[in-house]
Length: 379
Ligand code: CA
Image (cartoon, rainbow, N blue to C red; front, side, top):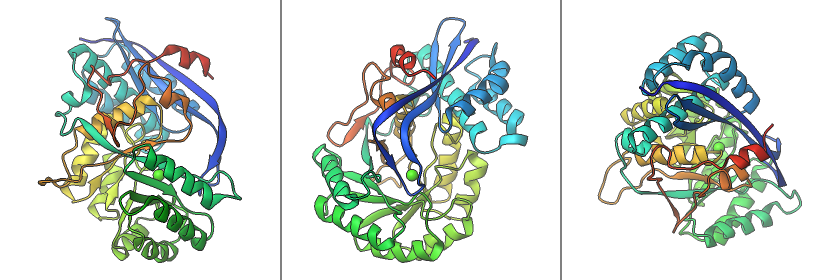
């Protein structure tokens, strides 16, 4: 038995030097997270992370979930998942309630791994690969007077830093400007670098289809969140109209949420976030559903080193889609905007090596948390 003794939420926030925005229009001035720490009676500590507004995640955990899991066996991780979900689903079958559960689930898998002396990917079926090809997420909007120049400069930094794939933001209120910016980036990085675009759901269906047809000429690999996530019929239309892959789902939750997307093939690629959609336990089920419907699963990642490590274990255990002599395995989203919790929270940071990121091999998530960073940025 690994009896759960204590659950602590660390809400952290750090200012950043160069605020940035996407098509959503929010200016990111800080980076933050709700980091979940779970301790067992034998002194094992597991770490998890919740995506989204961190104070809300903390409130869900402190008031709803923590009291229900104290005294239970961490190895009953899926029993605990079902119990917490059934507790909360009348009020929060999607959104922050599930993000809060995700943080708990990830921490419990970390505990199980540390107790068994095995990395999490060994517990969820084993690694299909030791390293995961990464793509750089960046090219947000920073200097409104240099939108094209800054995108080109940033893309070249990633190329020279060893990335073989880059995802850029679009959605500047002018499809012409978007197209000019993507064109400039494609020209600068050349044809050998894979390029994706992310609109953060700012377009209408006809605007997305029209722009998508132009982007296809620039060999853009996928069009992420072209339209609003609520409009599943619209996603079916855009996906059927375009030759390029349509991706989305970072704001969808649980197997029930993803069931409707994959069964209707509303997207070619689903992007569950392990820190949001339900943790390892649930994202494994979501990935299985996707496979059964011929939809790719390429997880979303936007968080601290805890989310990064969890995503790497999860991807390591995903089969090639589809298996072949020279498969095209799922990519890891390595977000590159300023974030001290990604770069400093682990005593040994997770870094890019020849365009890929090694899957952690130490027990649990395979990272050691530097508590001084939690203290320094505590809210
Ligand atoms: Ca995105």
